[in-house]
Length: 361
Ligand code: OGA
Ligand code: NI
Image 1 (cartoon, rainbow, N blue to C red):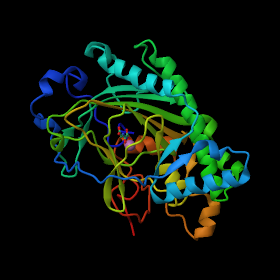
Image 2 (cartoon, rainbow, N blue to C red):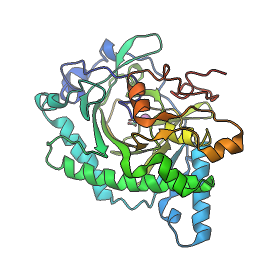
Image 3 (spheres, protein in one colour):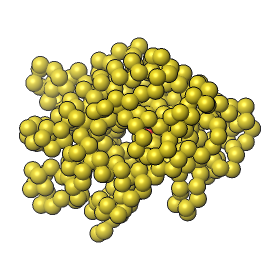
């Protein structure tokens, strides 16, 4: 999730990007400056997971698909979910209605302007601090909602509440099945998984991102490289490409076909599986032609779930490579850029994710 991709800082500019389009046609104002290399390789090899096979009554088909899901989480950390049962009309209504939210006048959206990281409804642009401690603003507007176990949503546009409620309910069910399937592939007992992660009270976040066309796409970024908190993140979009994922030290364009959902393993899944599932870095680049909208749903464990490596895997591996932490405290620490103090991890992975920034070995 973008808003949780980096430390929280309140809404800064007086205009959202959605309502500044005439000012943004020629050059990128300096506050957005982020020198960037947006090119990436094409990939036809992002794994595809057939959701319907995970629930098949044919045991052979089921076990094959559980295996391919587990392999995708371990090798790419990303996969394209097909035959998931969410109607395309609901997916496109979610994108369209989120777009209508961004089209509201700024004085309407200001009601939801982010004041603190833990507001259940937040919108605005977003400032982040880069490695050399320079602030820059992301080339995107966002709307972030806490949708489960308590549902929060703006009242306008009229349809927003209904579509977000339905879309997030459905993604929550899919995420649960994915967690159960990955756990099964690792021989973890279902009862244990339910008890630790408590998915009935899953903490779920909905984010809509709007990336207007950018006159100099190499001078700005939609969302810088990051990994997501949670178990599985689900992403759909308006048909305009922009998500890139890291694999084998290179960036790949992650295009997902219409009707599919791009899913990635997130940080708590990596922790719970003691590093088997990879929460890989990804970023959103911008383009100079078409507006892009993405809808991102982060499906987590319960806020009060204490997530550490599963006991059976620690026994098998002879050690736990991450420290356990209560999920809500993790999210809070992460939003305030305090994960370092929280001594979250002893990860040995390479690259720059929240999980391995603080390597102590
Ligand atoms: C996010 C994210 C990518 C995109 O919101 O965490 O990675 O393409 N978004 O919008
Ligand atoms: Ni993300």
